[in-house]
Amino acid sequence: MTVQLNNLDLWKTSSFVNGEWEQAHSSFKVENPANRQIIAEIDEVTPEQLELAVNSAYQALAKWQQKTVDERATLLRRWFELIIANQADLAAIMTAEQGKPMPEASGEVVYGANYIRWYAEEARRINGDVLPVNQAGRRALVLKRPIGVVTAITPWNFPSSMILRKAAAALAAGCTFVVKPSELTPLSALALAQLSSDAGIPAGVFNVVVGSNAQPIGEILTTHPKVAKFSFTGSTFVGKKLLHQCASTVKKTSMELGGNAPYIAFDDADLEVAVKGAMGSKFRNSGQTCVSANRIFVHKTIHDEFVARLQDKVAELKIGEGTNEGINIGPLIEPKAVEKVEQLVNQAVESGAEIVCGGTRVQGEGNFYQPTILTGVSADMDIFNCEIFGPVASIIPFESEEEVVRLANQTNYGLCSYVFTQNLNRIWRLSEKLEFGMVGINEGVLSNPAAPFGGIKESGMGREGGRWGIEDYLETRYVCMGNI
Ligand code: ADP
Image: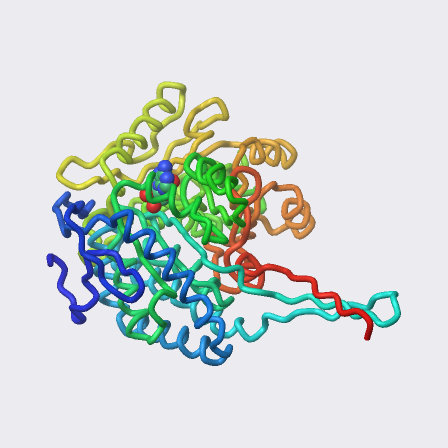
């Protein structure tokens, strides 16, 4: 073990199935993106173990659903408390495998845990309906039933919270759960499994399967007949394939896919608030979030002042290993992520964009790219049209509201958008006209457990958070009573 932990039980390196740690003959390696050192060898899940995971989740359904809502809520609450009690260790594991600065990792642990707390409480509010019907001797009821076994595939950018956002709602609804985390960040997921077991969540209810070959694992998780629902967070490209696979057995699906978030600062914006919002949305997790401001539209009358202020803030960012004190920008996840950002920036510059600061990778062992500001970006550049997933603020000047709304909507993605203005009428207009599942008004970081997180268009379907999040794990059943 290369990470110093207080609770050594949290360092797990094999799949967790039906309450047991499974062994296997082959393994894969996990690298620390800050220095490319191998931090762990993880046992590859076998096809038999995958089958066992789905079957034990299926078997566990009845027992989990027989528990009273109070019993389920108490177990979830205990899981939440254990996660909080182990926050420092979970953050250390996350920083080692994902690279984000320790304070961000700690924040993510709490953010994810808060979904468990929220849904432990929401479990009590899964209500049905009694409907008035116009037929004598008849009554019509609507029941809300847990959908059944849920499988999930999650990404590496938020190794803990992307799992907990799904599992919290699923378990609260009475479903059981099998998740395959990203092969780049399996350790955070396995630590959560240990804590679920410590909390007393019964065997088979929460399973984690780990493997480096995502395709065949995904095949089973999306086609197994005992699976009722599949929930995915990841790229639109992979999401579309998985959606196809789910069609073969008509599974209910939730898809949290890519984004190409517009950020719009109008000439009447409070510049300090606007720059703070841009920093939070753009540079958190080194720009590796699906809600990162991908296209920063700035009204031409405040453009130069905005860029100057942003540059001052970017100059304060400290880049380095997430375990070091005061770091704000950690590494990108893989060498190929650095190459992609490099290509996007170079192509933009060749097409006329200008580098205000940064614009190069950092030489050395880790996958670091300098925080960068690009001005003069336009809609014909690749950097405008695809997810950057790196610390590059790409700035586009605009003149009118109509023009900027048209440009902002000029994408197949529809996840998150941001508007900075003091004009109340404009706030209403844009909240309706922007084609995105989420709109931040004078705010760059929106997500919270009570609110519906999710996208439209090719950014996906379904919502995570709030009462909408639990709906995704319930089926609606009509019961008709006659001859009363
Ligand atoms: P990202 O761009 O964030 O890496 P991906 O969509 O590639 O997003 O990965 C998100 C998750 O999807 C990861 O857990 C990864 O292992 C998994 N994944 C990637 N390709 C496939 C596939 N063909 N089938 C199933 N899962 C996949």
